[in-house]
Length: 114
Length: 115
Image (cartoon, rainbow over all chains, first blue to last red):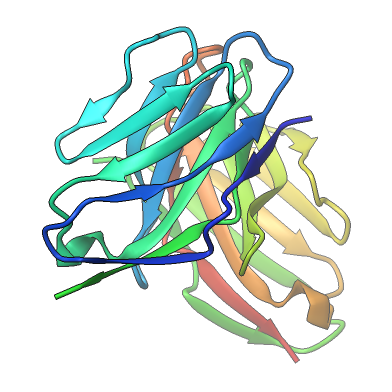
């Protein structure tokens, strides 16, 4: 069974600063994908970034990057130059190799302060 | 753009009522999913479907059933609603490519309150 753990229920950061959200996971799969999803207040969940476990290079999408440590089963999200629009719930998730079972962490509520 | 829509944003029902939550996607996706979202627990998978008339149980299927008669539509049914089913329900869809790390696209959610 897959498990995903986010140890920070809430975080805050000043606008323009950098923040890192933590995520650890556990799986017996050899290949898998990891995701960070963002759920803004009263808005739909959207994909922020995706990482394939076989790729050693950390994924980057503009101001968002990950630190993927496969041996440690750690997958943290770094948000650089935080903006007010980054205020949201962030969910770490892992999908199985069959592509049909997405397991989510409990979420981290991020508040970006002006 | 992929669009996943859900029939209601807010719903209030009484204990024992039969409840239908509808989800429609317009991207011809093979996979569709129903989750419930509760504070501190993240999203938990109730059921998913990888084809018309096909369904698989997720982590918490008890008290729920699903129906997929057409590829674009996936319904979640609460046969006899109970107060512990008060929650936010999210529908999602994705391509059915195995091993491709398919992104799931989510609907806006239905906040269900059972009194």
